[in-house]
Length: 151
Image 1 (tube, helix red, strand yellow):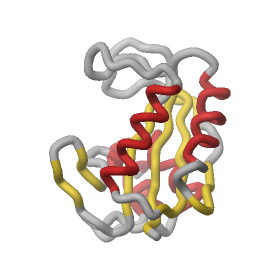
Image 2 (tube, rainbow, N blue to C red; image 1 turned 90 degrees about the horizontal axis):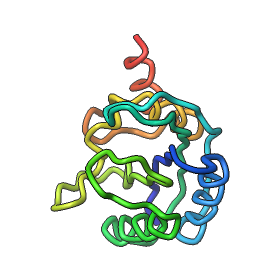
Image 3 (cartoon, rainbow, N blue to C red; image 1 turned 135 degrees about the vertical axis):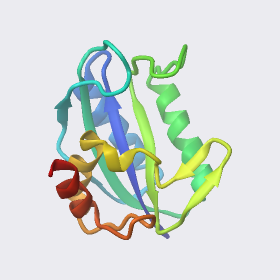
Image 4 (cartoon, rainbow, N blue to C red; image 1 turned 30 degrees about the vertical axis):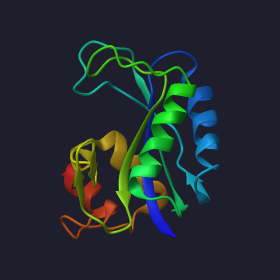
């Protein structure tokens, strides 16, 4: 079993229902699923779009990182996610943030997520449920990363 962290986001449709149901769908792939509260946030780096609802989830899995990513993409598709252009609005966005303490850099899969340290909308919900999780790149905990971001 490997501990993982996933960021969830939605800025189309019934955002709360989508996040709640999307998190429930993660339960089919993760044991000991924990989900943060939902955070209403401004869009970051995606142009003029509706506000997002963001959350984080943690759990453990026997899936490889690639298989977990494929499962996340499948869940997104089931919730109507389309990718007409980079940064397009999304019904459901699921990002693999941490996969144990592994560093992975493969085509289409980079873990830890390369921008999670600079995103309060990822760090704040993740700190609620996994403040002591370590970033294998910096060695800092999620709680420390959030405090540094806010400083």
